Length: 345
Image (cartoon, rainbow, N blue to C red):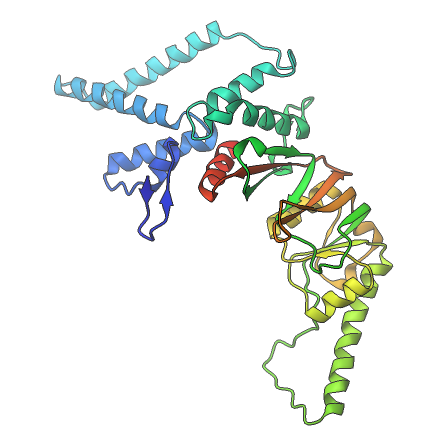
């Protein structure tokens, strides 16, 4: 159990997490922390092993130094030993057919990685989900995997065994208006990074409204902006709006009245993933909305998890790139975060 200076508590048995959050001041200790991070970034597993192994090598190096052997000679000896070890591993290695027995060898490798973790009681299921996710987006002919097409989303509630692989993208959002359609077939998605708001001048300004007529004129002027924005989206053929920013309440009402479902406050990373998977373009201005810039998906729907407030948006069967989402469930935020960390690695 690690407690940060801010009072945040982290319970883990993952070596990389422990090393990263420990306040190590000794220079050699910092080098071991960096070694753990490098192993974590490159492989994603074995962080505890490399630190223990490095500690054993340093212990033996101290014995050799006490005997009067120069550190450079010890370093050269370690490098030769590493070369011999790699040569021996190459000589005993054998190629495995990963397609045999429904990719059983890949699942075994993933199970090995998860065996010592907090989530080990569901290691087989999590391993199968991870392997299926990678194979869903992998280009086996080029031996390449675009990991950007794999999204890992967490949702508290249920248990680890409720974790599932969803063929599509899941957003921890809901429709911006409760009366909007909750399911859109053959979705044509307008992906916006501009808000549904009237333009604002860059300089400071004040507007004095002295009577009801002036207010009505200003209101009508604002309405024209909103109507023009909604019309541009409708004319493009879009039947779903996904926006990085928020909506003015008036704009939200107009979108609902025009039967144009919308999702707001979607993160930049998720916006890019949606554009990549659906083949749409990210549109920065309403004047640039065109039919050829829309993304496409077979189905977009709002899913619930027991309560009306616990909802998510699911985008299924993206037409350009096959994106998948691993939806991690758990009884607490701590369990969900730990499971997400292991699956990402």
